[in-house]
Amino acid sequence: MTGKAGIAVFISGSGSNLQALIDASREGRLAGEIVLVISNRAEAYGLVRAQKADIDTFVYDVKKYPDKEAACRDLMELLEEYQVDYIALAGYLKLLPDALVTKYRGRITNIHPALLPRFGGKGMYGHHVHEAVLASGESETGATVHLVDEIYDNGRILLQGKVPIIPGDTPDTLAARVLEMEHKIYPEALDNLIKGMYK
Ligand code: GRF
Image 1: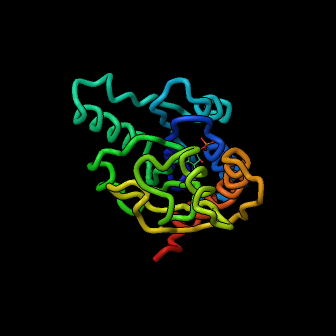
Image 2: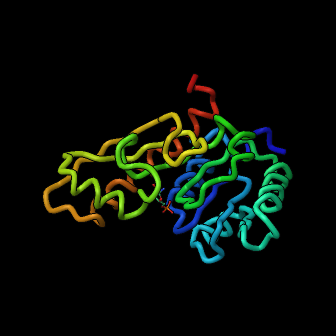
């Protein structure tokens, strides 16, 4: 027991935001310690990042349980066992069970690659977001850290960072620029939240 807030990070893929959180925690820029990384996909590269950083990992595959309730119970027990205080979703593509959202209400964050409330909601992930932003003719986009509730991309906005849209941008170039901003604001927002700065 370190006395620091325990954070579980949920991922589905590359885990570059997880890496930003790991780096921030190690450098003293995050008032918490990542105690567990959970992925719904066994092949997510973020699991390798976690292992390299000596952080325990768990593959949460709902299909391996008899029903959703059993899956949720197991997940909640695991979070208890690791004394998790905060949950950071970082590219996690599944909706969390309601019981979990209720228990950790106000302590679950997500990062979204656009300026919510625009370009969010079901189906708005990965390239779909950047394609929609480019099609809209906006001159800027960005990243949003928000609290998680039962609806996709709906909870209170904690922090946003803007980036310009440059003529000739493709979904790929835009995604890269936004991702850089995500890595800056996610540790900052989570640090603020843990320090009680969002009243
Ligand atoms: C990020 O663009 C994030 O905004 C979105 O999923 C992506 C995850 O990327 N929710 P990574 O796995 O952190 O590299």
